[in-house]
Amino acid sequence: MFIEKSNGAKKEAAATPIEKASQKSDETSAKASKPVENKKEEIENMKKQMDQKFKKILQENIPAFALQLNEIAEQIDNEEKPLEKEFIQKLIDKVRPLYVDAKRDHLHFWSKVRILKNDKHIKEDVTTTEVLDAVEDQISANYNCFNIELEKIHTYYNDRAELERNLQRAQGNKALDEFDQKTVDVLRINLEEARDFVIVLLTLAEEKMEILLTTSEEKKATKNEHMSMYT
Image (cartoon, rainbow, N blue to C red; front, side, top):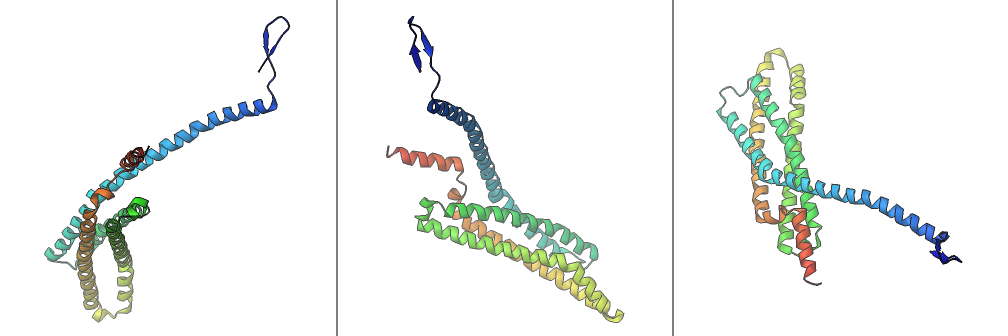
């Protein structure tokens, strides 16, 4: 705001309280906008990373997991001395990290499916929703299977040691051999079951692979295109 001086020159008048408040607000907003923009950029980058990670999980990690399970099951079948302590130890060392990684990947897969199921456009598509429901159920079944197997693996040595303590020396070797045989047999059966579960999951996912692998950027572009049709 300006005021006219007697000689015709203009002098800036003192800002009113409202103008001062407005100026302060504008300065504060300008400063705050940068952190907000940075946060938005960080979130967008995070979404891109999550999309890339999920694509790798679905197209690489989970199929490779099924192949690894099958390979280990075949190793058990072809092993001449499956009850050797070293062989059982190698089996456990191979299988444990596979199940741990598979649980992590399945959790990520489950999160992706839940996000898709909450999309209002997908909710309107009955066929897609039914497939996603089936995928989600299979993910849960697989996850529970992996949990059970990990629990068995974790307790193997304690259970064997307890059995050994409770047995008389005369019957010790036979009973322990039977315990080890049962452990290896059950492990092989469960490896094959887990492999089949994973194949079922991949088969279900194949039906809606395009939707599952749609990135956040592609989804946003589709949404903008859809909105532009009505503007």
